[in-house]
Length: 304
Image 1 (cartoon, one colour):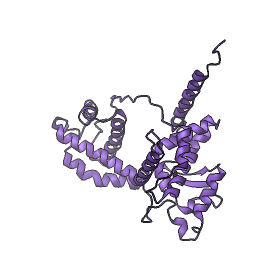
Image 2: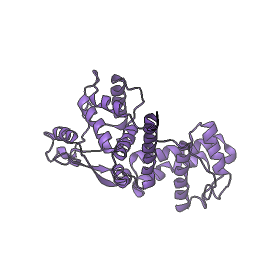
Image 3: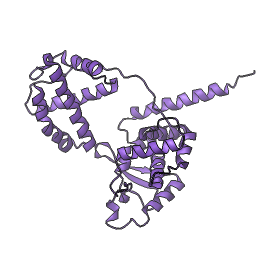
Image 4: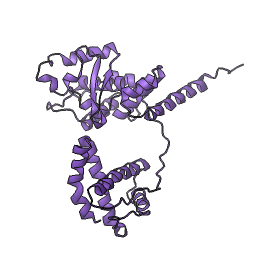
């Protein structure tokens, strides 16, 4: 298999990922980028340029070593790229381009460091809620988006995909389109946020406006995740919040606050749209760590 062959197959593979598997445009682009990485590997490591027709026990090890050392990829990135190649090679086998995947049954293991999700401290969340950036024309919209991320735990891609018609007239529930185009409903318990959503819907309930995006740019285009990250960065710096706050940090914060409030983990799983509860269980360790730190500060036996 040559680099040219890999590049030539990209269009058909991307169509398979998007049309047949029903993945989002973001996922399609990510898969295509990872397959281009394979083409670079085959270009720079010509001795590995023959995984086309049979399984090679060393191919996966060579590729991962190249990712980690030459490309300086993190373990998580290397693991993601290997997963993308598993799908790519399986597709090649399926359409008869190769007889067997070169990484099938590979025993290469990529160990990920055990890192707990970072939640934004409560005092910093409060600062973000009250913050204001003098050069930002969309302060109200940014504030609403931040509150929704913390209140519902939706992904930034899901937030940007919300249309006016996805919000109930009373602002108490929002229809979300998640990964794999799975639909779920998130509920808004905050009366204050419900009121803000109702005001955001004011004058936008006509038959044509219900398909319009809830969040837009200055040019009245749908807000993109990249554009919101820039808004969030400006808001954070104007509020003197030292921690690097990302939309995903706010998602972590939502899960942590809910579990700290005693919400059942199964409900948190549904709210976040996790396919497996094991993904949600990582937040229980964050809550346990917070409890441990609180007890260490309190030390109920001090002075006895």
